[in-house]
Image (cartoon, rainbow, N blue to C red; front, side):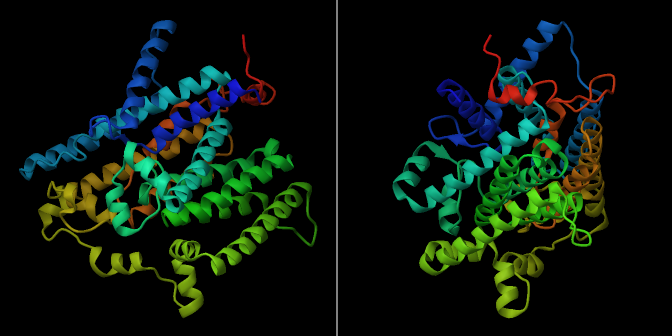
Length: 435
C-alpha cells in the first residue's frame, strides 16, 4: 500500500474514532466535542449530496426512527414541565439523534468518496481497527507517563476522575461507553467471521479478525468490563453459525476457524500467564478485567465489586404512582445515586418514557435487518445488548443504528442482492480508483 493511501486510511480512521469515541480538545470550548464537529460535517455533506442529486431523499426507516426519537423527547419534555424541573437531558434527545445521524452520514460519505463504497464489511474493518488502536493507546497511556501527559494536555475527557478511580483510558475511550462500543464491534466482527464466505475462505482474514477480537476482548475489559457482554455474544454467534465438528468430521471452514481460534487462545493464555507472574501492572489490570472469573476460581462465587454495589444500593425506584407513570423529571447530576439504566429512565420519565425509548431501539434493530444478508441474529443481539447493559448503566446504542442507516446495504433499491466482491468494492479497499 502506498504511503498516500496509508495516510488517507489513517485520517479516515481518526475520523471514525472521533465519531465513535467523542472527546473535547482542551484548546476549544468545553461544549464542543468531536461528535458535534463531525455532525456539522455530515450536515454539509448531506446538503452537497442533495444539491448534486437535486433530491431530498431520506429513507423510511430513518423517518420512522426520527419519529420515535421525537416522541421520546416530547414525553421527556412533558415530564420535565409537569415536575417543574429544568433537566433537559433527554428532553433534547432529538438533537443528540440528529448529531449522531449527521455524523454517521459525514463519516460514511468520506469513506465512500475514497473507496467508492462503504458496505458492512468495510465499516466493520474501520471500527475494528479503531477499537484495536484504542486498546493500544490505553496501554501506552497507562504505562508511559510522558505519553499520558501529552494526551492529557491536549485532550479533555474527564481524566481527572479516571485518575482518581485508577481506570485505563484511550482517547475518548473510557468507562462504560467504551465497553458498549467494544461490545458492538465484537458482534460485528463475529458476523463477518460467521457469515462472510470470503472471510472464512481466507486464512489471513480469519487470523486478522480473531487477533482483533482477542485484543479488543482482553484489553477492552481492562478499560471497561462491559466489553464482556459483546465478547460473550460474539463467541455464541460464531459457534452457532460455524457449528461444532459432527461425528469427528471437520469441514474446511471449521478447520480454518478452529485451528486459528485455538492457537490464538493458547498464545493469549500463555502470554497472560507469563505477564501475570512478572508484571504487577498487568496482574492488577487482568484481575480487574476478569474479576468475576477470578472470584469464581478462588472462592467458587461469580461476583465483582461493581455488581455487589449495584445489587446492594443502586436499585432505586419511584415511590409514588405519579412518578412511576411520568417520572420525576430528574436525570443529570446523579441525583438518585444510581447508574442502573432502568432505574434512571423510570425515575426521569416514568414507565411510559422507558417504553417509548425501548420501542425506539427495538425498531432500529429490526428495520436495519432488511438491508443486510443473514443479519437477523445480529439485530437481535444488538437489541438485547441494549437491555442487558441497562442493568448496569444508562446508555445509548444509536451510534450503531445511525451507521447502519447510512452505509450501503446488501440489496439494491429493487431488492436485488449485491455481490460486493464481484462489484469490486473490496478490491477498491486495496487499490482505489485514482482517477
